[in-house]
Image (cartoon, rainbow, N blue to C red; front, side, top):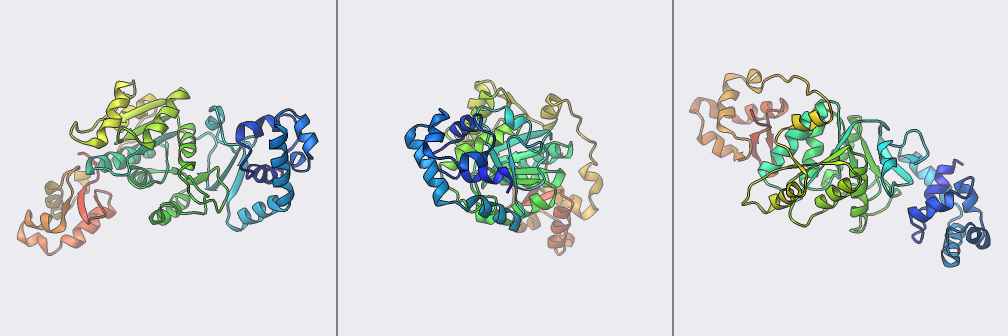
Length: 363
């Protein structure tokens, strides 16, 4: 039995956090050694009080087959388990104050990948959606992995935009075998299928709880060279992620918004506090000393009929199919459903949950 599974099983003891476990590991040769210790031996290591030593021993005795169960479950679900000592553990994540000792992941987690975190509001505007999709797609197309939390709203749009351009990593506040929110089940599968990864420090089967998400946020910022915030209210988890990035000396970027939108206040406060205001993905890529690959002009991809539709649409004001039809010549309206589908497949326009359409990016 590999030692990683004993460490994963030890961390399932709710009384022992990663800081105490790290101290304890420094005094022994392996996690398996800890698993077989008695109270006195644990206490003598100096990392745990007698109460905590007793709690850990009781956990190990009551769950004596847990390391084997974790190994079997992960193998069955094709979930990888890596520890902070493994060469495959993300290098930049090791540098944070409290790195997770164990990570579970599906897909490919490249240890030395260039990564940018992207977070934002669950309740977003069309402007925020457009910015998230455009920034994620163009940054990913330059070879940078987009990291986000797979939450509703901007996180989801960041992952979707990244999938159009390259790779993305979703960090969950639950087990990697749990789809949360449920409607993102297909998205999480697409992330893995596209060569990205779904990651968590929580064991398979762990249900999402509010207390898990602030801890999840430190992994998002910890995996990333910098964090971009797109729309955030004054108090939000996105700001917690940005604050964690700042505390680790990482870059923080913010997209400005409307002074009339509550979703812009958090970003504006970040900018006042020293976050870099960015208006284009190229500004972030320049900070990373990367060059954005040339992209074919949208207008070059349009048929004459599609060009009519494109002129009607904007980047931040979605229109329903009826509104589009009312603005077009009569000879085009019969083909509108097919034309809209073709333009979506080309990545020129996007459709939201209300079946309204907008341009995918500024042009």
